[in-house]
Each structure stands twice: as C-alpha cells, then as structure tokens.
Length: 185
Image (cartoon, rainbow, N blue to C red; front, top):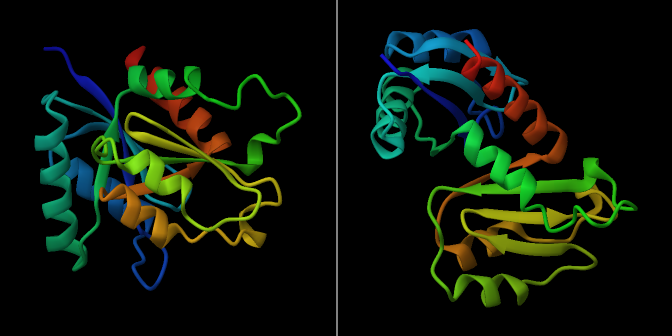
C-alpha cells in the first residue's frame, strides 16, 4: 500500500492561549491512524504518512479531532514534499543573495485566492515589506525583521479571503527535509 507523506501546518497554535504540547499533537495524529508522525518546533508543524491521499479529507479529519480533543478550531493546511519543493523553487527572492533567509516568511494558504487578491494585498499599508502571491503561497520579505514590521497581517488575510499560516524560510526548508526523509522510508 502506498502512503502519502504530508506536512501539516496548523494555524494559530501555541499563540494566544491555544497551547498544545507537541507530544499531545503527535498522539492525536497517531490516534487518527497516521504513521511515522513527527513534529518540528512548537508551532504546529507535523510530518506524517497517510493511507488517504486526499488533502481536503485529511485536513478536515485533523481539524475535527483538534476541536474535539483540544477545544478550539485551527485550520490545518497540508502540503506534500513535492509541493514544498515547488514552493522553494518558485521563491521570488531566490535571485537576490543579499536578502536574509531568516527574514523571509511563506504564508501557506488553504486554497488559491481569487484573482482580485493579488492587487488587494499590494494596497495593504506597509513600510519596506515585499509581498508576492503565487498560487497557494504568499511570500513576504521583512527587510527590518518581523518584529519591527508595520505590516498588518489581518489586513492581508482580509484581502486574501482564505485562511493561511506563516512559516519562516528556515522552517520551510527543514520541513521539506523531514518530508523527504519520510518519503525515503
């Protein structure tokens, strides 16, 4: 039986009082029948293998289990290692070696936004941040770092009209590495 490797990215976990220990999150995924479950850092990154290859079905199943077990709703955004490789290959900042990878964020979206979203996010008030929408990812470069940014992510979310969750570039690369390790099993 072929198993599909997924990287799941949970939105708004371990912020704002919605705390989940990673061992409890691993146990939840294992209770759903997923295999070789691993987590990375404390922000809701889970890598696992699934008998189902249906992203929507797997995502809904995890979201329902999180709500039942932990008592809150969290969007679960899935990507396969192949999709993460595409995210890295399409990085609009790749040709600019002067940019610091630690200041690059990828906002993974649950669906591709409509065509009006691109122009709308460019109208969101910001300082020096650069935003590039590509399919189901929004790449954001914060030249002064995220901590000093005036970019209002709530306004970006309203313009996109689809839920998303951000991961810094180093985390994206590490999650791909973990996903590829599972694919090699």
